Image: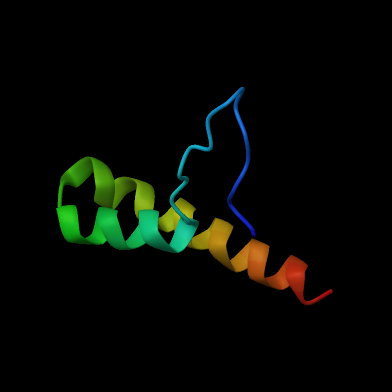
Length: 52
């Protein structure tokens, strides 16, 4: 399953990029608002790469 991997004996849970974006939108903090444009560009780039 995407987003799952092992670190030693552990299987840490990793938030998806979409989840991170939603979290930053909900937090409504200046530092999160500053990060959102780059995160959205990254999400678009990933989506485009998956279609090629």
